[in-house]
Length: 398
Image (cartoon, rainbow, N blue to C red):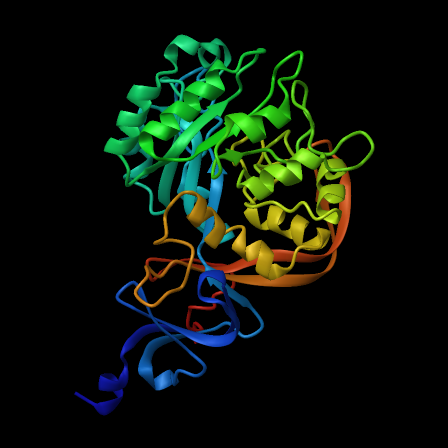
């Protein structure tokens, strides 16, 4: 065997990219090597002779594979079941890799009654890593009256199924409950306590409104997640008051450890909330999409577009990467994800920050102009190239 072949100790080396890895405090141009599906080395200069394939990432951002902490992936064919085995959910692989996402966290589409179906139909066949919040409603996010049924909110059974599936279930979800009643919130939190997992809550729909300060400061625990942070919807107090100021208790809640998730969605993100909030220093803990058919063709589009909005609102690229990698991994208690540590699974996103004149739309059709736009160039999942926009990992046809 030749010396050149012996020297090829790596499968892939990504060269010259600006690596941003918040967990390991890396924020500079370096080379990244992959072998056997794992991160093998991060060094200033890895010679080309040491690898089988070189990917030139000059001028690009190299980050851990993105984690979208709020998606709806229980795609199926059941009529009138909203996001639980029905048409408005989307199969993960069609929408993840092209945006640099290697892990999705389904925000409560399945409940304990249909999680086994979700696992066999969505988790097992997907190349994307699929995790989930288990809905406190046994039938999951099946829409309408079914999500109002407090009798179907069983904390003990939810916690049992969550713990039995702890490789895939990372928390408990409450969503869409209408009515002046704390019981669903309390049942979801009880399930979270029994399972030792966080709760994600989509709050609202009450007339009169349930007091938001009580939710943040009394009902939820540090580490629990409040999604649709920048929404202004009927039945829920917005975080930015009519005077344009972020409510004092919102800052207090974030300091207390309540996690604020963007969860953009089709109706849950407006610039009139987000821009003044960010300007006043209230930044999201997590940037996510709330991906489903009702959001992906509107103002949301994909996670890169939502990231771009916050980049243009004043977050640094380092903050944007942290809120889509290391921070969601921390909040869902998956320390194996969201970083580029040697030995970790090689989930990697290569991102381009395009400069130009761009427009971004909120869920009310209002536009914000911006000069920067994030675009995914290439995605690796467990060391395999699963998306390559411009052929960075390919040889020329000649």
